[in-house]
Length: 153
Length: 72
Image (cartoon, rainbow over all chains, first blue to last red):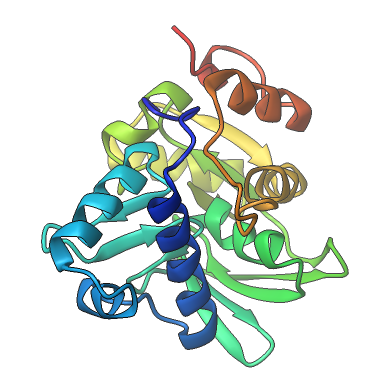
């Protein structure tokens, strides 16, 4: 969490919101090429901005430069599908899956499963509360080491 | 961060992955954490939390102790 407190520059802030709006509308993240087209700029500028946005780990990029994570959303499928109305997304982990209805202030169904035995453990969020669901959340890595291996964390 | 049926399933997972037991939270704590962490994410003025702010969120959810400390 090196640059947590740094205010993002204006371009980065606009790009960040653009990514979220696209994710919400299309249920998938925009590609670097689509971002460059939308901002009428080169891909190099987009990639530099995404790198800055990734410093706090809220965004994370794949080796190709495309987004892997725009927290709480995963830009690739995961075992944490979240359905809000007729739309659906993926969370990166159970915290992020809960983060999607928290971020949107919407009712949701999270089709989670036990990390050990894969038994279905659906969770329903209604009117800002957990309507149904059970279980214990486990985080394997101490907070200060979360970003050393995000995929495992 | 994974969801498990019970403490027993966490223990089994840790054994299978050869990992020490980490931190746990109830589903209610997880939901509160998600609300405090992600509730402002669509704010155009959003910025990531400082270490102090992040630790304050953990405390509000009842997540205290060395495991939840970000500062060295």
